[in-house]
Amino acid sequence: METAFVQAPLGLQINRPNTPTVLGREKAQPFFYSETPLIKSGEHNLKNIVISVLSRQWPLSARRVFREVCSDNFHITYQGVHKALRQLREQGMVRRTDGGHQLDAQWIDQLEAYSGFLRANYAMGKNTDFYRMPPGESACLSFDNYFQAVSAILEIMGREHEKPGRDDVYLQLSHPFPLLGIPARTLERLKRHARTHSFRATYHSDSACDSALCRMWEQAGVKGKISRKHQGRGNYNVLTRGMLIQIMPSPQFARRANAILSKGGSESLLAYTQASLDPSSKTLVTITKSPGLADEIRKEKR
Image (cartoon, rainbow, N blue to C red; front, side, top):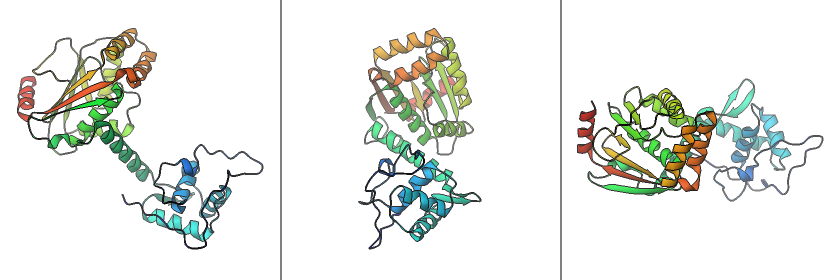
């Protein structure tokens, strides 16, 4: 995705000297342009301003976009707004419907996917291309909380299995991963991969909450079962392609998760997610590249 920026021509002022005042009504704006997490060009960029307007209201005609920009105290011409809208349509960021202009849904999905990519990369550290590690190498990563570790592992699994081919992915966990808060795009990608790959999980707790989470993950393509018997070789939690991933949450979080999920009830699922976001759930993850051992384990399980 390419993002271009419009430089303001001489004589065109794009600034925001004060908070906009709108007579007769309270202007409902949860986010102003200055708070929008877009690249700044050193001055207020006209296309970013238009995107900010369309993030609050849509669909809008070009005239309506112009009025909204002016009501935000940006001093620009209608021709400038019209040009910005045309360029945004050409770049695939805005589309025009019968009702007017609105942000393109596919571009919004690209933004979400890219932000997830950045978040996962910076959470995992410098080396995020784990399936290219030489065989026998390991990496140990520290995450601020359990949910962050889960998100990174799902990102690794997703990136690896974008490639064609049939692979068996195994998970051995005390409890299913927390599900609330997992991005919809991640779950959709798992569903897509489940058509060509096999995702199977074994959980070692049989509470009502564990069973409910198990059923939820099955909807995302991860088939699961409850078994107190540890199967297979190796002390691992996730086996994906040629990698074995070991998850080591803090003992405090492990005890807390057991207590929460043993209670049952929908409130426990929310409490489980909240606990996984707590700093006390700091988690270590070890990733080992060992295609030979991974293949042997798969043969045992088939």
